[in-house]
Image (cartoon, rainbow, N blue to C red):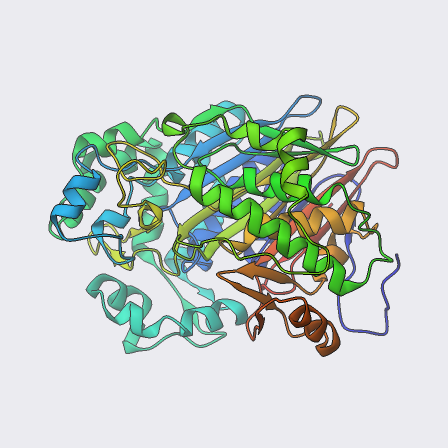
Length: 529
């Protein structure tokens, strides 16, 4: 489908050798520079995410977590789990003794041992080709000498001024001169640059052991945290390769990381939709309704059953069996909204996603997150490390699969996606936006394979999301459609803010080209050679 060149928008990137797509132009440029210097897809992804930890500090950071799907050229996909674990002293009983029934964002208990640096270094050791000091060069430059604040970053940053003011470390770093930087202002984080230099020189040990780990443990303990140096030392080698989970969607295999991520929910939604003709002729209200109903069913099961894979009561892949999906699909009424699922998880919003395909055909789908905007809002002033808040998704509820416990990983919303067709990698994609990610991935995959859209057009589409008993609709969805959905029993919420963001690269093996897109809801872009 050709886009209307008379209307605002952007064309899909068409590249002949390699491509990268991220949510920030400086990150895309850094990754492209590495590709042009002979680096592979892993090298470019690490260069790009390091830049994003500097220029999108409200979204991601070295104090966060990471998941990766990596498909070496000519081989099947691998999944890397870089999510951190709770301290060994953490338990439901310990938190209940403090009077907690849930974990607040700005709590030391929301901070699991960050897993991102372990994942980066494991990925680099196993599959990278250029040294880390080369890959981090742009990120270090921007951290130490500054970078100009882009429009979406500036807008997001401004929403968090009051939150940032509540922590001395955040206040000193993210409110320079007592205010949020304006769009176009140059901004620097020298301590973050120093941490990246340390990691480039010494590897993961520079973060999980020695002076940095000692400072972080001291900082967390002073706020009531249960973390120890042993917890951090164990995190150094915490990232591990695991087998992906998969679902066939109309002849294309959709590949996801297994729990503790919510990729299972994305596959469930696609499995529920696969029994319906979702071609371009389907009325928009019907399409939104079916996606909403499938989302509610999948997320209800996610919330009840997904957590640390070592503590699950059932094999998650059971939920992808044809028998289970057929049974659940029969619960969807095409004309009426079903009862909303019970939503008891905290909202998960702040993440960056990027993807790369290199000239040899290696493909990376990469996501890095600090959970909430500016994570836990706890920044250690000695190291400059902003700590994530992923532990806030733990349940303080004995017996729940996602209950906090010694060394457990919490349920994660961040999910990279990968596509395979006829035994070959056909693309890499991801949709940011916390809870929305699984529903967003399903919408993207359906747009590409049911409606024939290119990646950019699929990302450009207006979005909807059945969340917390309401059906959120972006402003571009018309009033007639909204009225139709309300008539089916949906509690319609005309959302003012955009839903999520995303990037994607599809591989056209027959023509030898890459087709990429980057979400207009963010500042980023797709670039290629």
